[in-house]
Length: 279
Image (cartoon, rainbow, N blue to C red; front, side, top):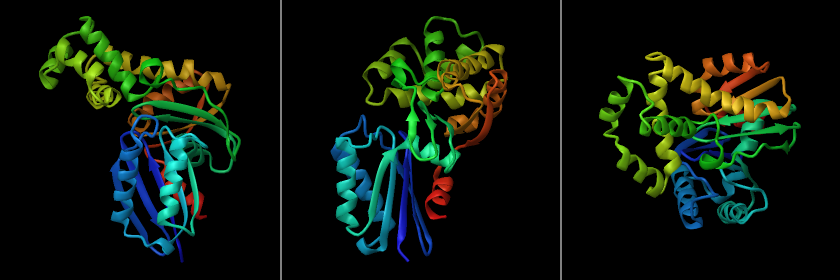
């Protein structure tokens, strides 16, 4: 029995599963093919394949989903070529993490799927393909509702002295944060979105410590609901992503207030993708 190799890669983490007569799993650093170099992406993929220990004739299909991957793009062709060299007999599909989310929460049915991780994205799915996408815009122009946007909102308030005490002092001491260090990391680090998103767990852990924190979290999620989800004129939506899972109760409450039912919230799409491709 040949394996089906299923990979879901966000910007932070990539999960790999070879499903067949047994399961082989590994986790690697994430890949965003819109921002990382081809060389780095190929090195990451090759290392993961080596760790799974699969021979070329053992794999019958590859389903590779990644952030920043656009069908027909140079990056997609590059990744397909690498898999084809390793597994010459395999059927190979390379698609976006958004299609992975849609298949994970909608299966073969039509619906709206949303990703809330470090960034955010969404789509209308017809059961086969994505038929509409309200573009994300990335962490500078969009990514409403995601962890990086929450971090950006908080840091903006912190730098302007709008974060109330004792939260501001606790934050400054916990992260040794001051104006120069924050501005330098945001504008000169190689991964500013990841830096902004790194504050999300701390912010969420203080959700009940002060009304300001709860309002900030709600403001971030509501911006995604109002600016993105309502454009689909949908009644139900399924969410994928670690940040969505961490904010599950708030998401359900705010979506209900907007007249939207949350059909599901899953931290990772991988198990659902395994079911989708192996049923």
